[in-house]
Image (tube, rainbow over all chains, first blue to last red; front, side, top):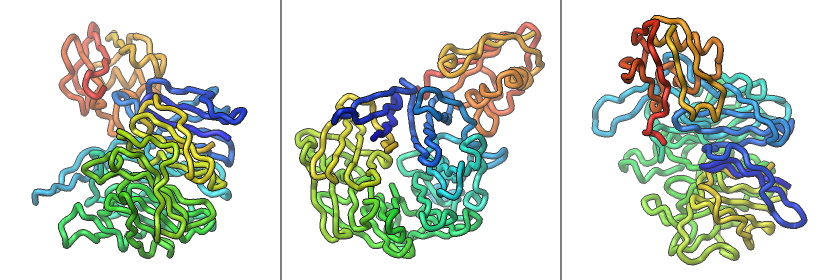
Length: 367
Length: 89
């Protein structure tokens, strides 16, 4: 078993050897790794880098990180602009569209070899049909009129951070945008519909709190074994859908419903995990105790899991791509802003700390 | 011909030695560099072909004026330095 940890200062590969987890590879040391995708269809590893001064980059390895090819990253066509809404009543501003970050990568369906999806900041969806060699902007999504009211959440620009491909139909894709709501296509990206009904945005004026197109889903996941079931960790709390995103129900959890990431059990849609913080303006664990919350009854109740996690002066936050579950539903990993990395091999009942000294962690994904 | 030199920070990512290339504007000079080293373009310019926010280009000792169209005139004796800005680090 293997997993990949993308951090502010490099990509770290962990492998389980003789019952212990060890770092077996370090790549891009010193560079910001914003996204990782391991494509199981052809055993190819992709890394999205953000080199700061020199922009966002994309690398590909077909030999487990021994060698990397530099690919041309998704690029916005000439003349495209991003709209920046103004909240003082003045007219919206525009700026040239240019890739600042690859914020999500997802493999297409098993019947789509070589097809990859990428979500970006600014918020856009790109598709590659040749294993990342070339990328094209999904025009239908980019041309949504609602795009012009989207705005950044934590980042200067809105960003697309979640892409789920329905295991029943590869043309059925669900994406989520901070702050631009949840969207679905059933025709491979030719047309899109907003699917945020029921989500609530407390950060908006009262008459706009339920606007579907300005919601801030921090992370969206789909249960592979029961694909009509979705979970969203939203800026305002936790939401779930049991009807293929037709509607969403708000869920309350203790000690808090605020967080950035969510993982859903691969076979049991009623089981999901979260890493809570106090709330949006105080992004630290409640009472300095780092916990994972788990529901096993569809959000009716939550357990607060703390065995093996620091319970004094812990100020970790887990970013949205740093909580992952494996195909069995038993092994979970999560990494934090303070470089702590934890693994559980019993569904979250207990956790082992693998490192307290990694750089800030941005993404954690199984191989 | 104008001479162009690149910050050592770039050498971590790709091999871009100092070189002399023809051109009467900065855009022409860079286009000729990119013709030989296509990957370099994305490191210096954004998607709309302007200079990246945190890349600095000095032409004969002065920061360039036109970071969008790169129209600054270049002479045969010009020296161009592509640097990493201290901002953005």
